[in-house]
Image 1 (cartoon, rainbow, N blue to C red):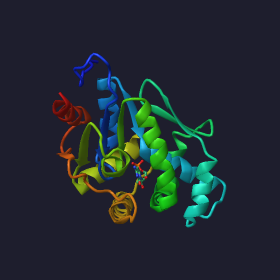
Image 2: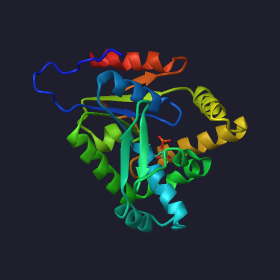
Image 3: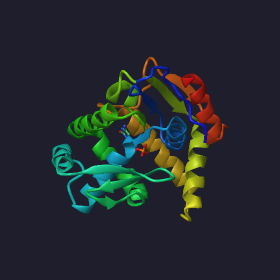
Image 4: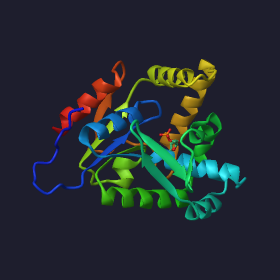
Length: 230
Ligand code: DC
């Protein structure tokens, strides 16, 4: 795969590409493809909120209690292990890459995401990662809160029907039974929670480039983003 140089200086600078947008807009696949093309790391911030949620569910912590979730986060180690295809997520050393994508974790992650105490910890961890290495970071508050000085910011969107269809396809490919109406309802609920959260809501940064990925393949969208970086 061809690599793209985005800096002309002899000394490699740390670059941060921020990608925000709603669930199902294609952020993770596009961010992965872009990171690979640029030869830099991919940072999946949603996986961090998911991993903490999984740990809280297993430990039967009251998910309504943000302070308890934050205490749990302080005793938690979340790491990313790059693989040929993407990233494995390690929760206190255990590979939870599959478990954090379960419908239960997906539907409960809003508890961790809405707790200001938790977000403070997550944002700190994410900044530490982005200070050490170049990253393509994707999430909801990357360009607005985590990396307001990112090298480039994108807001990736797609129409609701297509976002829902992408989720249906993804789950069916994993052999899961999917009720399309139920999935649409869940996606609508997640959108509403993402946009209305008091802290770190999903919001386009003023200086973000908006890309509508409706009708595009991952590669087509990644190419559009790359064109902006060249
Ligand atoms: O992108 P995702 O579906 O893996 O995100 C999981 C959840 O975490 C979702 O409910 C939104 C939330 N999230 C967030 O609040 N802030 C981020 N930077 C990333 C994800």
